[in-house]
Length: 107
Image (cartoon, rainbow, N blue to C red; front, side, top):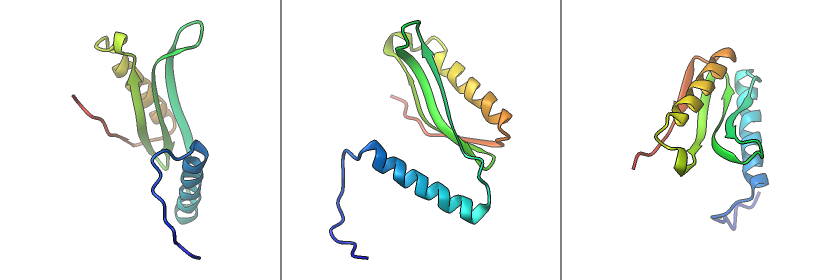
């Protein structure tokens, strides 16, 4: 297989990124035998359904990885992020997870 030209893409499509995630998941399942991966998300919405806060990640092989946590600027400092994380932790435990990973920035 020719590896040229390699291209750096600043705006990959959702489909291309999902393709990579699916390929990695399939490889990991092949190597470990663990095929229990699930997406994990929780949102704060109003009656019209706009998202005001949310958390997104996945669980697999007794692990939970949180990729995204966001709270609307007007709602920050009210404990909503903590509630999102607590809900994710509870669901991860229900799914049999024994560890959780989260990366974050503090400004």
